[in-house]
Length: 421
Image (tube, rainbow, N blue to C red; front, top):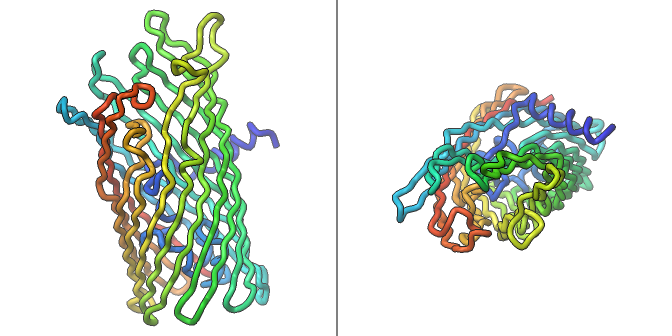
């Protein structure tokens, strides 16, 4: 199959499920990849699961049920504003609601087999803004950005014995990016249709120390992204808009490692805690956008002293801490609470209103209704407002100028239907 056909089929699968970009929460990652985890603050790596383990810890696949199928949808609603306090400027992002799909299936190979296999299609994360009336010396201008990354994951778990399970997963991801920066003014640009496939692997383990205590761990490799196939339209003032071919370099989805513990405090009360490391520093540092193939004699736009447009993002690695509680009231009703914290990976001196991903604190609540072989999972997640200011005077790093600040909060609703059989 040709790369173009692969891209078309893969993108169509996600579009059919209404996958759209999102402002995610641990950097560009969602805090949880199924509704149960989202209701427990993202604490999931040590919890026995069913089909949802494919997106979390593949070693937990099928521990709860031998065969399961899930369909889910989340609605993420960010609130972002950009301000210059000294000038009394505070511009809010356009209202946005991003639907995020989720589909998963897992089954044990046979009644006595130690193997369980699963497949999972989910939105990994992203970020984006949409501002229409930002005041500049040339008048009100606009800027926007969309970064999205969806993953299809296949995984298998092997039950070594009653205590230990191991898991492996293979991921294919589809990323696309577009953005603009004051395209209505001379010097402004618009970049569209950049895309890439990314490939990664995941390994996990789940160990039942005792009847009440279990440990979990997972590692996910980085996915290199060769973003190309796009266009860059530059505003050359009197010469008008000029379009070039575009590609982006040195933008990677990061590796991560996670460990966690789950404690069955009582027959009805489960407590889980995770610690996760995300390697943003090697994934998003100095990002380059190259333009080529323009009209004869028309130079491509570049950052002075470079052969490309540079985005000096210089993100930091991130440590994420998650705590979740699940209480089974009876055979039909289960309640969940959670908390998640990850210090923003975006340094103040590299903060850009184009690419905000700065929410740090999250509180979550969840509920499950169980009916025979069916379950309905619901969760609500609130990302508390966080504000950062960039005082960097270097226009190559901070084109918005010193004193620009961003405030970011968000609400997310999650729902899923799970069938056990």
